[in-house]
Length: 414
Image (cartoon, rainbow, N blue to C red):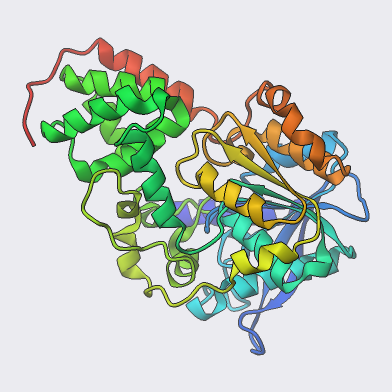
């Protein structure tokens, strides 16, 4: 453990010493005397209106995980700013070396951090790109500091703390009821496996979500067929564990949910009540949520605020996105005065699964060409797939192929 702590300290010092990493002084709590250094990184040729990229989470760091993204953006001539979220990575601790307290971790303070970084950069406005949870922060910046927004990209967007109801209804419509032609057979096979006790209903929300987002209906059907034949259990268990209780695991300078999870549960409703039926994604945060305060209230009424967002906005929505499904993106488009939908063939977060597409969209928006994007989706989809999560699909395919070669396990009714 001591060696691991020393390695983490060395990595943190190395990251902090990078020439493109900067710091801006921020209060731990509004009006308080205690302060800390909020880290941010800026790369690419300087411009008067940079691209402010806000990743998902809460808990995702910015400095380390997105180095390749910033390098590719710089090659495109983009001036990219990314903020290390307070309570995460290089922005985790106060001046005394103590982890930031729960009172320091609110959406309002994070949004104000973004504005403070733009001040430190000496720029009046930015093109703001938010992904997943980052879309809530991007929209929050539009609520609290609308004068700082030149244009916006919302990638796999959230809109309310009640999105979970829409997420669950959409997943069941597709993959339990089989209301779409391409999912009807898959849904029938899944219902049969649950009815026969081959797979527990409580595992379906996590396993099916990941399999569908990264492999589509085809890979999910292959998995269900393997399970029906007595194979595939290892892959199912692996999928069911991905992303479940991620708050129990801290990957320093990459993903640190342990502190900022307070935002997820207290303000964004990450712990809704499960209903006990199959395909319930709400189970994923059930155990983790016991360590955090209950939901109080979300900070903004975004549906009421969006009609006042007068800047150009592109909304990226993946065809296989089950976490922030298309229906949410369409609702946002219906509220924005100048928004366009950019439907892409992917799961959740182009920033993490198809960064070349993400940068193409961002560049077009920065150039004032957002209205052309819906006609370019086929070309954007065809760009090479790059991003930290892009390998999950091929890995799933390889695991399914390997499991076909294994002998079937004795069938045990659960």
